Image 1: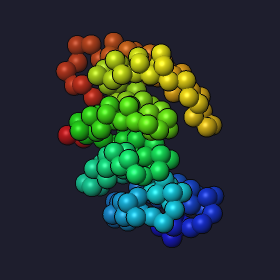
Image 2: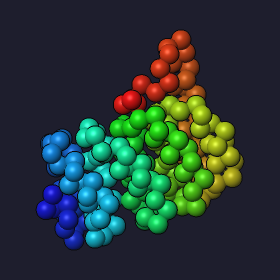
Image 3: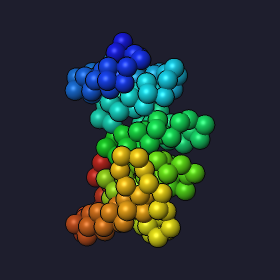
Length: 174
């Protein structure tokens, strides 16, 4: 945790990677505290990363609140959205869907990406609008529209493969 609170981006993200690899449940509380109150954007962003697979009771609501917090930096919100892709509950879907309309291109991009991982068919209408109209580039990646098009394909493929099965999202924790 000490490295996660550092000032060097290399140290901070290496610290986050170590925490993620250990998957030590007692660290969840400290990660959530860092996610909410870390001094720098980099520290809060790095705190969201290991929460993607950690199964502490409070991890998912903390990630949802971060995604929904419009005063938080888009980098933190985007990482929180990405982390919800694999560690979420039913309510997480609605948080991500709502934030597909966010003013930040990074938040829209990562919410779309997470919804693809979830295979959420309810996102298709909003994603179609993004695919047609949102050509803003996300640094280090591609446009929101290109991501939305890829997400639409992934969700449609997932829905086809799920036909006949009852469960809407195989990853939801509730």
